[in-house]
Image (tube, rainbow, N blue to C red; front, side, top):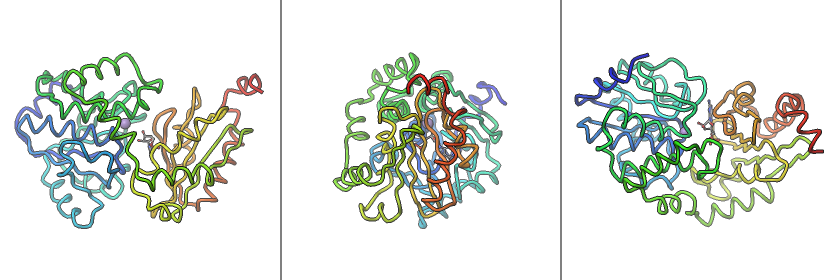
Length: 345
Ligand code: 5GP
Ligand code: MN
């Protein structure tokens, strides 16, 4: 793996750059991508952000959003392939294995560009020439900020870049609440606010902007689609394609839903199973030392962080939730601390 000095040289002179991130980008994925883009433009590069799919409309305010190329949009795919082919440098942000690019993966794999990976997920795969990676970081946005400062370019940061980076740190720490909310997070956040990040505006845009349909959907999901099993310490939502259609669900409408299940007293693992066109998408959340990333990796072809992971299933929605319950039953002793369970009973 190369040093920061070599990386710094690599981006010292203008180049054709592509920045990409994982399928269905969240605020950290898109914020780190657009924050980095706006910085690299200031350094004189030609930069395109290509996302493997669309993303929630509550992220559309970020500077550079209008030029983002969506690989899954039929009218943009050809352009995306062309831009990837011409790229001299490709940045892969907020993911640790290329499969998270889904149908875009093969084009990045085939590229001869210099690949850079900036990420905070476990077990990074070896697909880059330069990797700036730490699982200690709460967000990829935190790492992008650090890298720019380490390179000596702090003076290139401005309020638009600060807004993008702030958004990712805010959401990946669950609004500065999760255990990853370190002193470093607060120090960097303070710097971003000093640079002009509008923290009130960003939290309003991301957390407090709902369509009526979305609010009704959340009400429906909590009252009709939530299963609670106190013996197993689990609570989960199972949302069908039909449910999504009924509430005219948009990308991002299920964001945060799983946290309602996790907030129930006594629950240690929460899940959200969503039936999509290409199978069941799963979100896992857990509390304390319960590691859902290992569980997701071993059983649902996924991964992520200890307390927040995701995965997939090719079974039906019902078969998937049955498999989940069965696995929790079988692994209850290894998943939870047995003494805790006895003590709390
Ligand atoms: P979410 O539930 O919000 O989609 O994802 C939670 C965390 O797990 C995020 O850090 C996300 O990047 C990761 N994650 C989600 N889906 C997958 C997946 O299919 N594979 C892996 N390795 N990580 C995932
Ligand atoms: Mn992230």
